[in-house]
Length: 316
Image (cartoon, rainbow, N blue to C red; front, side):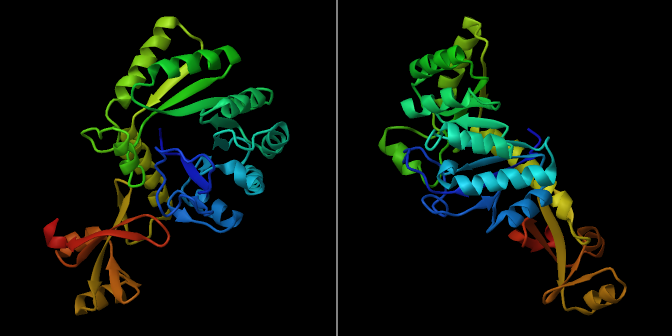
């Protein structure tokens, strides 16, 4: 909830082909690795980006992470060595490649939690096998509208098996899955982020779990939660950790003012109040507002910065 976990996207490869998969075209079906929004090439890059994000844990996802098991095991082992045993690591899988031998490697490396997207008997077999190991076992599924009967049956079985908890995610709409969802008759919610009816189906299931008094914990995550809370908080942590002297942080973004090559800019530079930034001079927005001069630049706090917006100081 505090945005304190990074997302380690280890590969876009996956054998499942779920029609509701929300992964972007830049990642889906490609063997690429990202930490949050930053592409990485090796485990050193992974460590550097997680440190820059001031993360207290990481979620390993894809694609199907089990397809690149060696890469995952190495990353888990190194992250535990660098950040300590309390650095929490969970991994998402549909069950592909989950076996006693693969779980032994993952748990030995330091995996804390396995989250299984339950799609088939293979997925349930993965859950059963994982329950034999000292790792928290979780089922996490998107909520397809009208699937309450199937979810009730699944949760009943998971409760019987001794699964710790279930995450129900509101079914998201993305650039990649919008056409596929529309072809199946699904409609987009007014907020534009999710499929209409997903929330209502999830709440029906939650009420059933409460009425039945089941021991298993079931949690519902709205799609809007990640956009409005989790994602901005994670960005804010990285912005705070990587803020340059001429930047201010607000709402997960960094902001500075550029002055160009004016006489004022050179005077501020000589007075150590401006920084040479490429072909321009940069000053803190507070100075820019006082001078009523310059161009405000807003950017995502990535390395390098990803500029989102530019406008004159007088327009603030």
